[in-house]
Image (cartoon, rainbow, N blue to C red; front, side, top):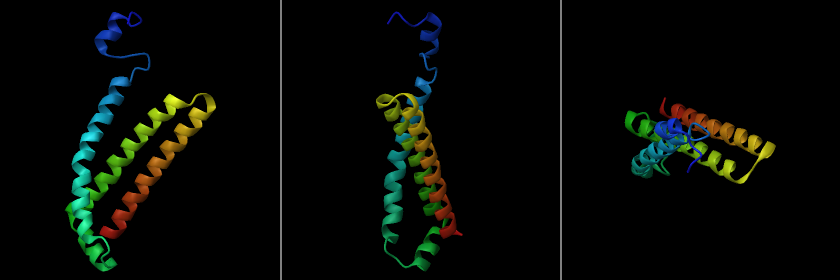
Length: 123
């Protein structure tokens, strides 16, 4: 396209100045989830349905607690970025701003709640 200056073409920045950063953020979080989700399934699956005391002692070990916390954190950040792009693509005006703020607040609230739950169970 002829709308980009030579400087913008060299830096890889479009009009929003963060398309490349967002793309790499989504790519890195996707690869992270590709590794974390199977680890989470295989660490969480055996303890599913067990009594609270057994679950508490299982998540007191560092590996299951770290895997669960990382899965929640990376998953919610990936969700936040993906939903923001979908909202930007399909809405405009005040609705866009309100929905983006709500999605960001919800994703951070869910991440904090999940991390708090893991910490409560693990400690």
